[in-house]
Length: 69
Length: 269
Image (cartoon, rainbow over all chains, first blue to last red; front, side, top):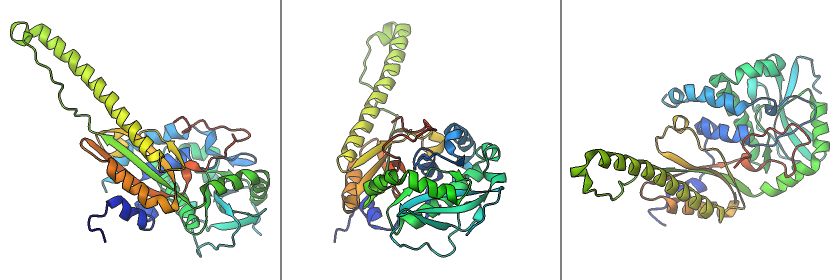
């Protein structure tokens, strides 16, 4: 009905973005600081590594060129 | 039955309730391995096998510095979480959580059953939205007139420079306040919120100040309302960007602290 429906409302109604279209930096915000952190008989968990610092350094060096593709 | 070899680990993506939903055929996870479901104690864990020569601690330390590897792994993880979250409330697990085998995963589902149940109850029928707000630091020049400028140019210069520093500080304060205001407005439509660190301008690709990098857990039937609030918050000198809906990554943490191994990253907001 509304012709000038806000972009956000359209986005909200639509299905999720295809995973490959999600910006890597937004994804890493969530994957490196979010999610369930579990413990126990882990071979490895991210909690063992200061991943955020490492990955941000790697990102800063190369994300721009990735995004420009 | 998957026999677990010493050189293989079990990578955990997400946990859901056992509601009999089926995975897409041939869903591939990290390292291109097929994703499978482990059903136990009323929960389902989504896992795949990973080679420990690439997903052990030492190789991983190196891989994490490799953006191609990190990006590929993050996207593979996300793809699996999305596929699962399409059909049922899903608790995503932190990137790169690797167990020695399926028995350890079952043990986890037993031990943390109540935590998973609580988390899944909290995020059911809700979606995560991301909102980033940018303020243009090119603040309007402060109203400042100096008669001195004609007679005492040195002093005028110093005063001007001081004023410019003050005004930059002041515009930062104002920008931060706008960020708070936006966060508060969004919080009022959300059931929970979480602030991520503002992204580095080189990562966001934008020169403006990111004054808010927020995540909001919103009832499914209030998604459109939330988006309208976002749209209403844009204005002169401020841009507000909406991303999502996301699987509830930012709201999956257990209410109580893990038994050990507190990562200490990201929960500082």
